[in-house]
Image (tube, rainbow, N blue to C red; front, side, top):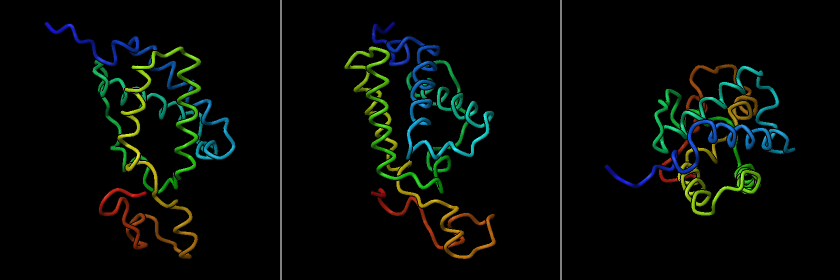
Length: 157
C-alpha cells in the first residue's frame, strides 16, 4: 500500500472541499464584475453548480465522488468568461486559501489544477451577445450556427 496521500485526503476530504468551494463561489458572487455570471441563476441552479464543482474536484483529486456533469468546454461555452473574470477567480482563490489557512503546497497544487482548465473556460463569447448582435432568432444550433467555433484550434487567449 502506498504512503502517498491524495490531494483529496491532504485537503481533508469532501467536507473540507465543499466548505472551500462554497466560500469561494460566495466570494465570487459578491464581486461586481464576475458576480454578474450568477445574477440570473436560481437558487437551485447555484446549489447544483456548487455540488457539481465539488464532485468534479473530489473525483479529480482522488476522492470517492463520481462526477456526472458536463465537460469544461460544454459547461462554459457561451458564458463570455473573460481574462478579467479569470483574474478575479485567482484573487478569490488566494483569499480563500488565507481564510482556510491552506498549506502552500496544497494551494499551489489546487491552483495548478484549476489553471490547467483555463483554456476550456476563458474566451468564449457570450451566446446572448452573439445572438443579439446577429439579430438572430435561432438558439438550437448554438454558437456554431452563428459561425463561432470555440474553442478554436489551439488554446484561446
